[in-house]
Amino acid sequence: MSIRRLPDALINRIAAGEVVERPASALKELVENAIDAGATQISVRLGAGGLDLVEVTDDGCGMSRDEMALALERHATSKLPDDNIDQVMTMGFRGEALPSIASVSRFTVESRVRSGDGPGQEGWKRVVDHGQLVAEGPAAIPPGTRVRVENLFGNIPARRKFLRSPRAEYAAALDAVRRLAMARPDIGFTLEHDGRRTLSVQPGMERPERVAALTAPELAENSVGLDFQREGLRLGGIASLPTYNRGVGDHQYLFVNGRPVKDRLLVGAVRGAYAEMLARDRHAVVALFLEVPPSEVDVNVHPAKTEVRFRDPALVRGMIVSGLRHAIDQAGFRSVQRPAEAALANWQVEPVQTAQGAFFGNNPLPLGSEAAGRRGHDAQPLPVGFADYPSQGEGIGSFRDSRAHFSALPMGRAEAATESVPQASRFPLGIARGQVANTYIVAEAEDGLVIVDQHAAHERLVLERMRTATANGRVATQGLLVPEVVELDEPACDRLEARAAEFADLGLEIERFGPAAMLVRSVPALLGTKDVQALVRDLADDLAAYDQAISLKERLDHVAATMACHGSVRAGRVLSVTEMNALLREMEVTPHSGQCNHGRPTWVKLALGDVEKLFGRK
Image 1 (cartoon, rainbow, N blue to C red):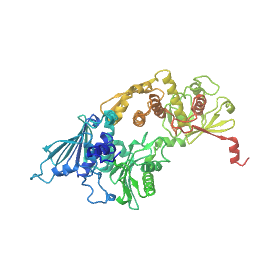
Image 2: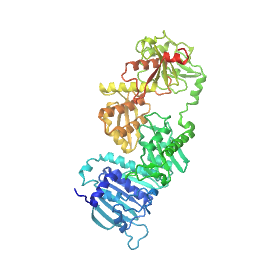
Image 3: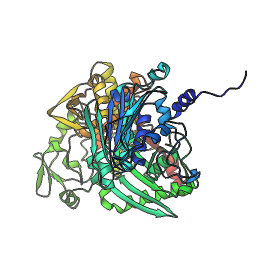
């Protein structure tokens, strides 16, 4: 077989396979070109998520007629004034984007230079249909450039059929514009999708203000700023407090020299910085801007320019971890929910309980509020299932009835015994003896001590209840007295709306409430109405992470697990002895109760022999 030179049209199609994976890829290249052209305002229009139309208009320097023709040739660029590719500071630099896009779409470019209205300075237009020039001529356009990409992959059915739905492609395009808009707060951005404006930010915004405007308004009040320098590197941006986190890592925006990147080294550094402050299934919200000397980073790794390679990766990772931890440390008590002053005062008062109510000093509280058994915490209802469990040896409902038998006697931290203490040998997980750090239940078993993580354990129990209820029909719902509106971005609402019927089977009834909000009418009765906003946001995050290549059953399991997390007993809540024993008994009869929904153990056992070794008895 003889060797031959490939034609230019085929070369451009091959290059397009790397540069133009989907409409969002083409959009990213066009917006980067507009940024490099010195634009102060960039407008984007999409049709059908970019499948039918991608249009980018800027007010940059523009191109002359001759420059426009050269721009559509392969490896022609204005962004490398010399051959030093290691010193690239522009967004695009390969000279592949425009000819590659033009080879797989109907491509129209109109441009006019900003230098004036003299001869040769009028606007000009060129139209290329899948690699073939079909028209050119004068164009009435203000200074700047407008590029239209229509019918992407229209002549390549094998590629077009692998594109996703308009909604999915729009979500990817929105994410691309959002990241570029974060990188350049000095430039104004607008985005219209099918005739409706979905994003608009003005030029001249401060970086924290721009990031919050593009993610969530509350981030500005729940984040810390960064300005950290080390050995010629500089780290800026904002990072969320540990108490402000999300269910997936899609809300981490990383930039190197103003270029949006998705780098495993940087993602790992963020997780390392939050390692001791977040659960493994939670993720911080960050927008980090790393400035590195061009000689210390290689941006020429891949045509998409989303990967970088550092000369000293250990230095970069260490700087990010140190910078984030230092900023979070400076936040002080902002990362902690401090109890009210009245609640703190209760620690100094001996509680007294009577048949009429529970008293802390001179403040009566109703028995149903559970306040008598709680120290330093606001009252909240018992979790589903706890109040219905009997005391040891009594019938159903006797836990509530037994409250009337308490006399007006001083109470310590443990409840007064109404009968003999049960034998630990009767139960595999033993009998509750107390609570440590308001998080761990300590129980005495026949052969040792059992320590239970109350949140992890109850989370698993709630999930198994939901699975049982789903298998027997729809989960019982609890209607909200006033339906709650949850504001989200449009792609998140699209994902939730598409799965509304599946949520209804799990007891969560939601409906669309405008382009960027969901209305919640009822929630699973198992969960109660503690934090509907956080529940819906986490469900949207779960769908973004798991909604594609998994079965319906797996997807429902993920959704049910997220709901169970929100409906379970939280760490830091004081439980009565009866509640602790009820939790242990249900664990003993519930499948998979040895691990929580995220794979962590729910209980551990310290054998008596090990305890004796600790004290030198063996």
